[in-house]
Image (cartoon, rainbow, N blue to C red; front, side, top):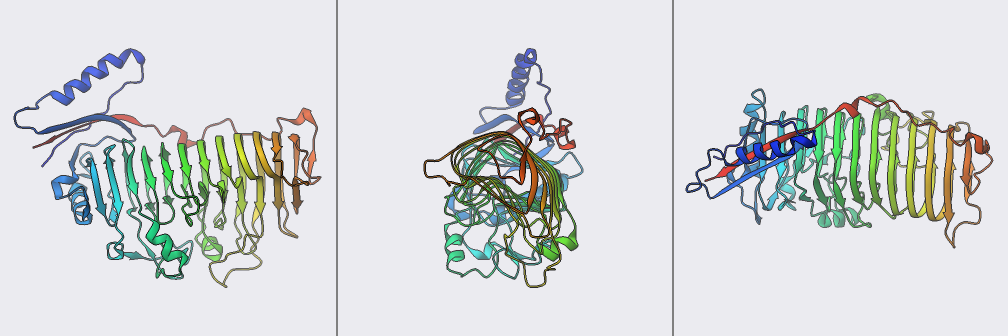
Length: 482
C-alpha cells in the first residue's frame, strides 16, 4: 500500500523560499529507492489541516479507465482511512485518470485530493445513488415531494474536512438528469455534486465542477466553511445548476471563484416556508469576494427564495458579472417568514445585464399548501455602494409587499449605462423605502436622493468576521507507487 506523510511548512516570508524549496526536495527524495519505485508523487498544497496518514485510490482497486465503477473503491478507501481520525487524520489521493463512481461518504479529519488530470465521473446508474430524506428545513425535495438522491460527495456530522486538488475535475454528467427533469420522469430530487451537512471546519478548494445534475456545492447546517478557487461550469440553459449554495450556515467565506451557470451563481438559503421557520437556522456571517459570474437567466448572488430561517450579515465585494440577468437579487414571498437584513455589497462591475437591482416579494413557489399566509418576510438594511454597470436593460425593479414594505435600502455611487433598447423608465419601485446618493440614472422617488454629499452613506463594515481568521497552511504530500 502507498504511504505518505504531510508536514506543515512555514513559508510566509520571501526570504524563506530557498529553504522551503530545499526542504521539499529533501522530502520528495529522502528514502526513495529508484530501482524499486515506479513512480513518486510529491507536491505541496494549501489546506486548513495537514494529515498524517493516507493512501491512493488505486490501493483499493480503483481503475481510472472511465468505464469501471469505483464506488466500492472510494467507500473502502475512506472506511479504511477513517481509523486515523484521532491519529493525525488521513488523505485519499486520486491519481490522474477518469474515475467513474456513484456516491460516497466522507469522514472527519480527512482530505480528498484530486490530481490535476484526475476526473471524477458521476455514475448515470441510479442504483449507485441512494435515496435519503428531505432536508428538515425544506420538508420535501426540490424536484419532487419525496426524498432525494444523495450527493456524489456527501458528509454529515463531520469535523475538519478538506476537498481539494490541483484543479482536478468533478464531472456530474448531468445531461441525463436534466432530460429526466424536463420530461417529468424524476422519482426523487436530483443529486448535487457535493453536500456537507451538520459539520464544521470545511474547505472546498482548487477544483473544477462541470455539468452537475442540479446544485454544485451545498454546505448546509454547517459552520466555518471555506470555499476557494473553484471553477464551476454548466450550460446556461441547464436547469437549477446553481454554483455555490450556503444554506443555514454560519461563518462562510467564498472567494476567487469563476462560475458559468444555468441558475444563480451563488444562492444564499435557509429553509422553505413553515419548515424553515420551524427549523430556525439562519445563514449569517457570509463573505463573498472576487467572484466572476456568467448566468444569463439568473443572478450573480441570490438571497432566497428559501430564506425562512433568515439571512443576516452578508458581505460581498469585488464582483464581476458578464451577461447575467441580475446582480444581487432578493427573492421572497408571503408565507416565507424569516428575514433578509444587514446586506452589504460594494465594488461590483457588470456588463450586459437585464437588471442591476432586483427585489421580488412575489416569488411564489411553496413547499406545500401548509404555509402560513400571515408569515411575512422582513427585508431591511440592504446596502449597495461603488458599482458600475454597462449595457443594462433596466436599472432596478424593487417590489416589496403591500402592508409589509421592504425598508432601509441604500444605494450610493452607482453608475448604470442603459442599453440602446433599454427600458424608457429605468426604475420600477413599489412598497419599498430607502435612500440614494450619486446614482445614475436617478432612482425612483421611494429611494429619496440625498445629494452628492451623502455618497458614502451606504456603509460596508470594516471589522472582519471570524471566518476571515480561518487560515490555510502548507502541506506536503509524498507517495511511492510500487
